[in-house]
Image: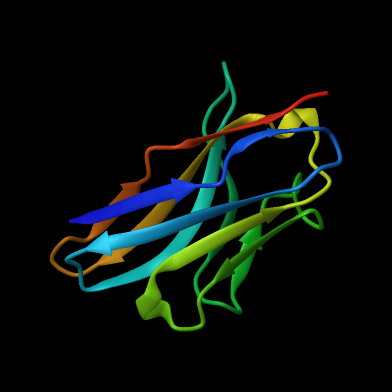
Length: 120
């Protein structure tokens, strides 16, 4: 099993920045990808960014150039961060950490979510 614990959400003014963190723990063989999704009220959960490795990343078009996902170059540390700059009110959502795991506990795992609110 894999446990994902997020931190770093909060209230920020438009144009501000926040940094989210997610740490994975538990007994598992290997995490393939780690990423961030978000879900705003009344909307479906959507991909924000994902990282196969420290150098292989993917972003939603709406956040490209503003958000940066980073994953430890030592994948064994199983941590992922999301640096969010130039935040907009439409970025308001609950942000979820995600991990795709290989091995006997293969599957998709989710964190509990952290609220990000962008408002003046």
